[in-house]
Image: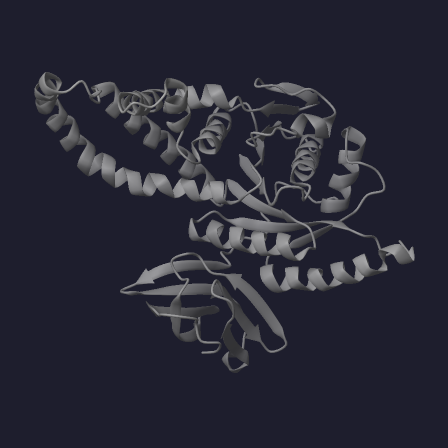
Amino acid sequence: MRILLYTGKGGVGKTSMSAATALRCSELGYRTIIVSTDPAHSLGDSFDRRIGPEPIELAPKLWGQEIDLLHQMQQHWGTLQEYLAAIFTWRGMDGLVAEETSILPGMEELASLMQIAYLAESGDYDVVVVDMAPTGSTLQLLAFPEMASWYIDKIIPVERKAMKLARPIMRSVTDMPMPEDDLFDAVESLVRDLQRLDRLVTNPEISSVRLVLNPEKMVIKEARRAFTYLNLYDLRTDAVISNRHIPARVSDPYFAAWKESQARYTEMIYESFSPLPIFQVPLFDAEVVGIDMLKRVAHATYDGQDPTTIFYTSKPQQVIKDGDDYLLLLTLPLLDRRDIALNQGVRDELIVRIGNWKRHISLPQSLIGRRVAGARYRDDQLEIRFGARQNGRSPTKD
């Protein structure tokens, strides 16, 4: 069983890459389904077919589905949302506004991700390809089960008992909606479902995230931030797909500046994501729509390789807490420690230099503003220690 999650900034060709990958998997004999968790579904446009909330066959051994957000929301959040809406209405908010306000940030995207667990556990498919919403931040929400499990084990039992005692008294003095047992049951069920999903997507033998980007500065910066957070929440990225490179054979002077820019930013991509495998995909001479064009994209991307391959197995970077400090761990094998230098650039960026090679790392929120207190290299890992937060701008060099 493989789950392949494709994410990236909107407009980089993520949906086309997901569709091409799913088509290639089906051609290799895998029972494959491709699903879109993006509220603005465009998966059907890639196949030039209408795709709905139920799986539809797109090719031999290939099915597609655009997840019904309303159904998923009602299934996983219905009881909780109804209670929040009742509270808001009780406070005097208009009923329709209360209903809309009760949808918590990220709830829709996360509800759609729940379908992944169902498809993976159904036994009907060998590969689930996921066209993610155009951001990696949705995956940060998968840290919620780890925090909520403590709440469920320690707090909910106490609150449930307390509410049974308090409910009759509260109802005699106020008409405020009281949480019933079915609300506590719904919260527990929700977190259990999230934990199932979390176990699937954080298992590197099952799930791989692939970052899709273009050789453009803003796109690369967003992809770096997404990559950092994916590692922080233990979601393994096994490849980067750099899309829409102007082919070398294009000699029109109009594209000269574009080609020079892409060459410069391609170097930046390797500096940012090495040692991850980086697949370069050309800009095609026709719109990527329909089966034939998707086959061309798959061939250009994988060049005969099996897309279900785990292209990278190590974890390139991770953040761990060490007392009051944090350690940023980078996997960098076979280095001479004398070649390593660190620079803190802008507030949220760290630059690691190794000889003539450098790597730009976007820091997670937990490290922003902290002072680099030291670094050491051992067992093929560079350990960078971040101490207490400091006022003002970070020093430019450690």
